[in-house]
Image 1 (cartoon, rainbow, N blue to C red):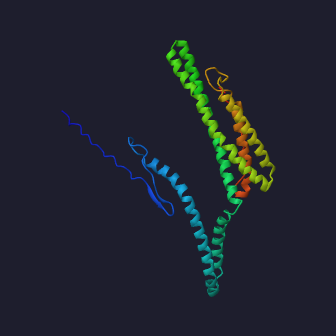
Image 2 (image 1 turned 45 degrees about the vertical axis):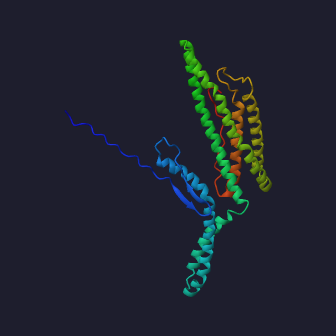
Image 3 (image 1 turned 135 degrees about the vertical axis):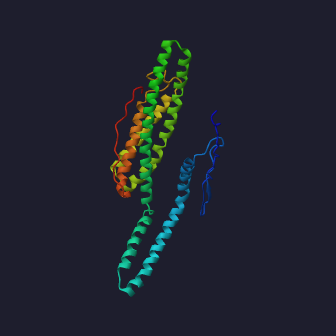
Length: 286
């Protein structure tokens, strides 16, 4: 007989949750997410990093102010040293550091902080619409697969399978409602920013973006009415969705408005006006 099988159990080593004490904030600590799952250290650290970035934002501002005071102090101390040593390079070096730090502080002076805020929000809205477009593409492929399975079930006389596919397609209305709620974020927050910058800059592109946002909001409202109607009339009786034409048009106009906002303000924030508009996407089932 061969040697008996030896089973060696490796003990589960639990990674201690990350913990950082932040001045004027307190202790930031991440708890495990589930008691019945093996914790993934990388996942815990990644999610903790998101929390840490938010908590550190005011601390980093304070450190920038301290850095500015230190740069001014170094320049004050450099003047008598330069006079004694007859070496002006000491002053030049401290002035370079001072200019760099002051540039960061001047970025806090209105309207520059709001320009960067608007750029960040516009960029987020562009990414949001693109992500929703990609999701709808995946949803379109899923609908095609469900319709094929449903037709096959009817051909085979398998009413149970046909019922399962019908249950799955019934959920699509709720999914699209959630997408619509995400898209609703774009119009009000960008409209507030646009109103402020139109008064400050009077740029024609910003007025055009504001009009696009208003048309997008109207398209979303119209589509929402068709989506929440008691009898939803769509291109396919198996799919409880109205035609997505108005939704897609509103998405495209909202994205174009965000592109206009970004490209108009980008030079004022030190960025390139490199955002591009896109054509309306096409799908099989919508």
